Structure formats: C-alpha cells, structure tokens
Amino acid sequence: MIRRRGIHIRERILIVIELRRGEFTRSVARRFGFSQGKVIYWKHRFEKEGLEGLRTRARSGKPRKLSDESIAEIKEKLESSPYGWETKSVREMIYYR
Image: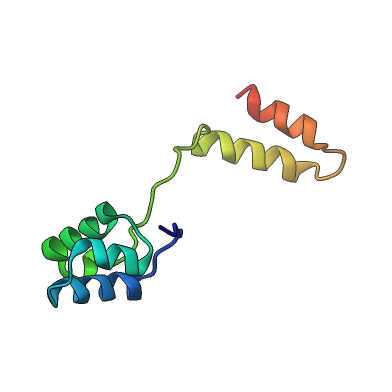
C-alpha cells in the first residue's frame, strides 16, 4: 500500500463514486493507495455531511501561551526602541511573562 499525505477533495469524490458503483472497499483502497479504514472514513463523512464533508476542516492548532495583553506589551517594548534587541533577549522577555 502506498501512503500519501494530503488527499485532495477530487480523490475523495472519486472514492465515493467508486463505492457507490458497487466497488469493494478493499479494491478502492488499493486503487487510491489508502487504507480501508480511510476509505470507510470518507464514505461515512460523505453520507453524513454530503460534499461539504469531503472538504478538509480547519484545525485550531495549539493554543497560545501568551495573552493578547502580554503580546501587546511586548510589541510596545520592541517598537519603542527597535535597535539593540537580540533574539535571546526577546526570548527571555517572552519566557518570563
């Protein structure tokens, strides 16, 4: 099985079409280079949400450690005297917030 990252919506639609034509999950998975579980996952998403379910969802990512207020204070300090800052001193200023 070939494993690929970032399956595109076009491939997801083709997976659903193949399954609706009566193709077996195993053969569809092999044809597209995905696990049977991933093919079933997209089938269920389509059945539950339609075409919108085949889109890649936005991910929230890791929450920020600094508050908006802390970021504003740091920006203000950096902009008040833009010269003489080194990466190490900025990093320390952020760390001790």
